[in-house]
Length: 336
Length: 290
Image (cartoon, rainbow over all chains, first blue to last red):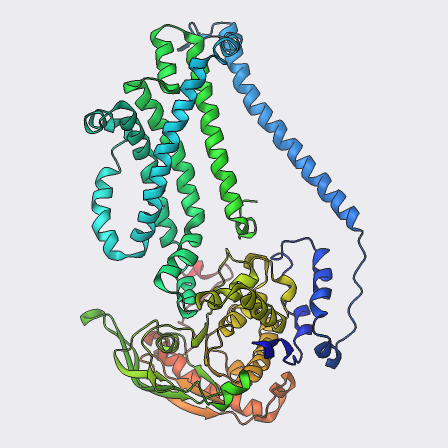
């Protein structure tokens, strides 16, 4: 291969100028590219000197700091609007809640027994740091993580295999199609019978909730993978195993992460329902217990806790997703 | 390395009495019928024909993706049964892995072959330099223009030192200006690597500009209609397209292709000619006649 580097190149370096007429497709800032090109031509001085290269067009000088500053200004302005809108949407919810409880609204829906935001805040300061509350959160999170990771560990490889092999698909899809419409909550009685203890049955229900979205999105990810990429990998000498590891898995990763995000949401729904019905401990149990004990502020505290935990979980998934898939930032119709 | 390859005369593609039938019974489609063709070591051969004539099917067989119904394809005397890195393939669609950086894309074949990281890196950088894209080694494919992507596709296919390069309308999706430049780049790369190329296209000028020899295919079922030698000297230059020799070849090929393109169209068009369907189209478009 060494001879490649020293091979004489005729009429190649100048070609860039003709074949880059798509600035829209090139995402990095325009100021960056001419600089990069200059360094690229440096290693091939022989070829460059042989060429009747027309004198490089003078690049309009733009101060880098200026570009950065205007970029920064635009981003922050964007951010400010985003943050303001977020405050408005959350603020409107609180305002509605506050006004509803303040004036004890009664128009079909009844605010008669609904605790005020202040009562919930008081509840948070009293109960919020109590051992009981924190233990409930920890137990719910542990159940979620167990159920979710088991669902991921089974759902992703199985989904890849089903997506890739017709026979595996023929074998598994009928049973999956029957099981899928059964909501996780409907599994509660069966789960209590099946599993030796309460903890295992709740984790199982969480698993059921997360499993199907992860599995189906993984299958969909394999199917939506462009066949030309698999053919390209094959003729570059990829073995079957390498094809899975280096093409099919990364190629379906965007869909897998969609599945993980949806699966996490359904896992929380299933977990809370399971905890309310058969639980001891857990945020769902905490909320239901509060209702039984006519402790209305604690109900709302439980709800808000569930909301925040769900938000945190899907936020973590999204963060891991964008760390693992940096190329998506440039994909056509991309997320940014 | 490249010289050694030329001296051992590797990269001889031999297709004999090839037939391909898709489907069965009522849905049977004869895509290719008794096609024989060859590509000599180091030769640049184009396959040209109307759309749907089975030229891509032929290439898929040589690449190892499709098995022929009858006949056989051989590379250096060995029957082709599956895809392999001894045949580099460049596809019409951009086939770069979007999750890999440009350099990692070029390294892919070497990684599959178990070449160690530092050697992979050196080779990929040399090839990217050849393609004039070294400065983009850490970009993702989605950040590049179509022409750049296809140049990377070509050097990626060359990274594993294949004996032949199979190209399926690689410049079909590019605009005319970019395509002309890409053709020059390709002839340059081809002359440096001295490998055999089987090139599929429906562009007459492109096939003449690039090739030593051109096979013209008939409409479906695809057969070889003519084999034309291109006597133009090397290296080819863009100005050559204006010479009388070039023009004559274009005329000859246009005549051959036009017959087949018409044959490939619906019988209605064949019967009535291309003068239209006898419709009156008013100033408001076809809507008016209804």
